[in-house]
Length: 455
Image 1 (cartoon, rainbow, N blue to C red):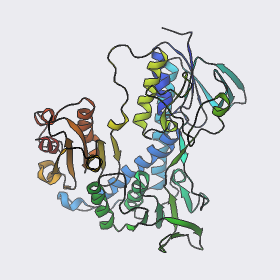
Image 2 (image 1 turned 30 degrees about the vertical axis):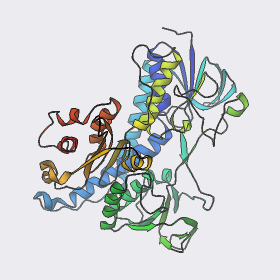
Image 3 (image 1 turned 90 degrees about the horizontal axis):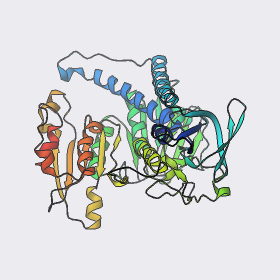
Image 4 (image 1 turned 120 degrees about the vertical axis):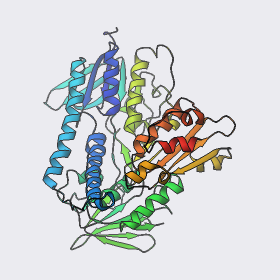
């Protein structure tokens, strides 16, 4: 135990509170400063509400298609007040759970705004009006990110919205144009379509999800088109203007979308302004803090984790980074250790159908000239998919043809976010396709497609 060593953490999102908890368990004296909501603004004000609304929209879609299950159709109607209360309840529960855990571990939590006064000193303006000057042996910057706003538009919180303006929902738009077809954009397109909005999605490339497998993107595009979503492929929004009844979006190819609302879903920016980083000599790049494999900045005892590190903007990655920082603060890991490999991080997109992937992508392998074996099995071959009345999608596993080692994979279909864990474990642990193939899996289950693809 090293209670004399002091760690100050700026930002209480997944990276910050995971680091605080892990360090406190190791006997470090920890102070955590959070300016907005303990648990993370990007996590609790963006991710959690959107997934809650998507889950509600999915329940509505399910009840609208009961006839395929041998039941009489029932039409569900959204109760906006109840949905809002549900979202607020989830946010409060998660934030309170984080606070209770840290409190039980002796972590000092200060609500307020912090900045570096020196390489070992943090100045805090607390929300209660007090000020604090904290001396630290180590400092972690985990201040998260915020929605990026293009220079051709000014959000008004009424008709022109950032993703964060959409929660809690006051009502659902009759029609909406979503600018941006990355992960956030397609999730919003799915979410609003589920609640009956007429959706137009501005797609700057020739496919949605430009960084994903084209086969994966094609399944999602087909789903969108079947649900009436308009896709403006190869178009970039150049202006957004309020009209008498809504918003007018003009694209660089001349196409125009007029809808009641517009949502900006074009990425995020790191929250590193005003932290005093430049003054104490911390190097930044485009606002991000470059880090080494131990999450250290150019100043050894100042760490960065989460969105500000410029690595994968995933809560799971941020939390793992936080735990790695705690290990490093106490002198490094004790016993067997695996460095964080960002290329092996699993990710999911909560559309309908769900999409998930991990590790090496097929297109990436071909572009580099690497020899791979690709096996693909549609869910329609499994009994469980037929039982669920949903046979959309497939499992794809990428392996080394010489050794059989699992290098990556992608899944499109129901519960893809859960099923990808099997492939993620195989990729992380350097397992072989035979390890999956010879596993005795449940029948009937969608996971049987994993074994079939590994065969």
